[in-house]
Length: 138
Image (cartoon, rainbow, N blue to C red; front, side, top):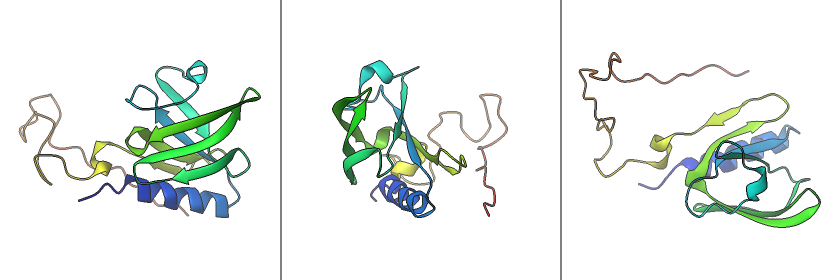
């Protein structure tokens, strides 16, 4: 099964632009193949404004997100593997979506497998598997 992350990124980006809000990507700059201006990386992460007014030639592909933008007045090319995107959110409202490894589809163990290494007994001190944190957005 292919990753659902790029589809969710494109959908959230379109929704934010249609809502006249400013989409931002939170990117793990430590992931291999991330090409961003390193002087703007803080704590291994970078926030990128991907609104139509801020970027040119935006390509929200399945494997990579790429665009041209200005950083401190200097034109730069940015290329980010979709697996490095940690979140997409609106600057104005803060609404958006966080991603984790599970959003990339099933791993080598297959769906439904416990990949934490703690087993179902919660040997790490936690009680059972973590439940998703969902909330209604109006």
